[in-house]
Image 1 (cartoon, rainbow, N blue to C red):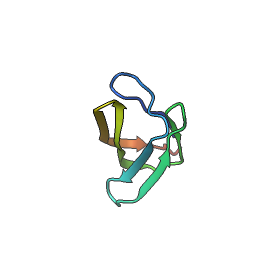
Image 2: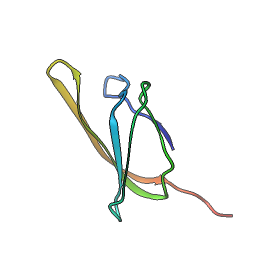
Image 3: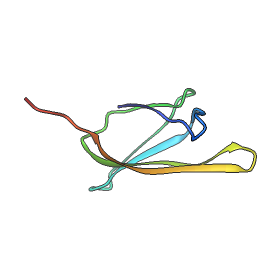
Image 4: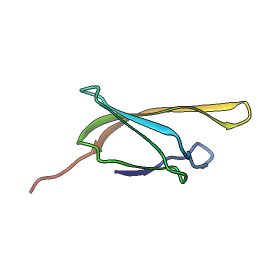
Length: 78
């Protein structure tokens, strides 16, 4: 999976710790985004919750991301 993370203003979330947690099993994968806000990893099929810890976008302004991504990865057979 390849994802580029941005904030609500479109700014890249560079060097941020991203955690994805399987909604059913609780299994977690974590990696840092690269300097361009990209995150690449192999993710098994399932429903995942994506979390990025709070970060400061400008002095005194902090943001956090936590979002359920349903069916983040689906593979067809046939």
